[in-house]
Image (cartoon, rainbow, N blue to C red):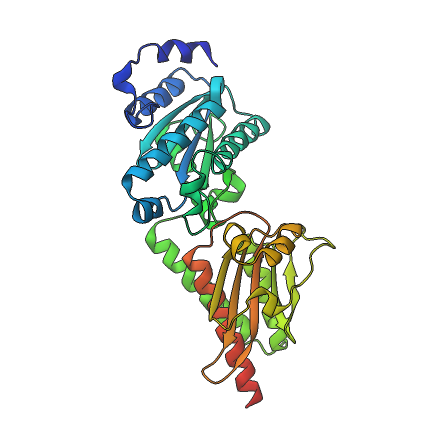
Length: 348
């Protein structure tokens, strides 16, 4: 670690430590970041946010939540070791400061180890906590930015970290994003811009579905391709005589990807089935085995139906461990409903 930085840290005592997690507190973190900027020492900063951590407190209580925070922060601290320091920035948010780690590859490798430390502890000290959660594990989303590569002052640096974190949340969480100006400069995450984005998505879906230049099926394929790219999912399929056929897939899929029989997948006529591998491996072990072979870790099943008839199902698969957002579930349900409505209108 940078020698100037190490000397600076010697100034801090136990008053600078968060008592619950035994890492630096927010004020100390801000001072250390400003120290690096003032002394023009290159560094990276990673903002770590636990995905849906509130569910732990709601389901298991705050004492259990505090225990999880202590264990996970300890694992993250050990993973960083002599490459940087960790501070609790508030609640379930942590800041990782990494002096002299600024090349993309070095940042990627360091943050990857950080993420892996959280994933690993799900199978050890907090396995009982993780298994009680809807997704079956605790995950983190991380946004990263670099000085002076991306920003030259404190406020701008944290603005970019926030943008990278927001992009990670949009991708389904449980990932890390290193800020890239070409990709992320125009990202906004205030309430107004998000609302407009959803409205634009809904308008796009409606216009694509009502295009008379293509068939309804081809319109669905075009929408699937766009949404798969927008939300970062691996494949979207629909049923054809109770067997799924692929509407769109990305380059993560290969010959091992085999559409699965509808009733083997759902086993019921519920309106929507939402599965994570960690959950359905206990409920449907045979099906989970097929998903594991195909490296599918999260999947949504959407019923395409009107009030009078069911017109099939849409299936959305991810080959990345992720958490489905409320927006994604709403948008995919909208697609399924519109698809069914158009088929019924055509039939009539």
